[in-house]
Image (cartoon, rainbow, N blue to C red; front, side):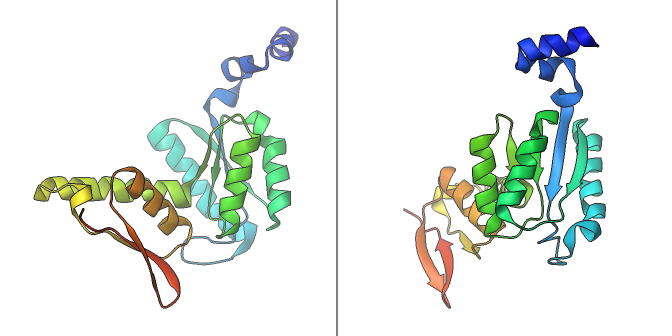
Length: 187
């Protein structure tokens, strides 16, 4: 055991090769935006985080651990996740309310040397892009040739809009009743 510890002390990157870090993800939440339930707190959000961990294991072979935080303070969440990050190969932020989720993710991406993924943003956007790509393939159209409307500027809506833009959707920003909205127009 001491030899492994000394090897990692000499070359910290060896932790990925010699420990569980290579295949672990922390599923982190503050319980502030859980499913359609809202701000239910850390204890009540634990079953959802356990379910997410089970999905990581079942479909990806990844060992994921629920980490439910009893704080909704952005600075404290960032400090805690930064402190536990050395034990994990990645961080999956889950069910953290907007707009705090954007700042938390951005700060952690800057601070950490491991992937940080906010499922509510990126997971949803990936699913929407996949579904839209397949639907357009069926009808013989391209993303740049169709009108796309994203209603809402929360975590999911914002990430969907950004991903669709990166994939070639033409856009024009609009607002509806004061809420931001993006509509794609054929070029």
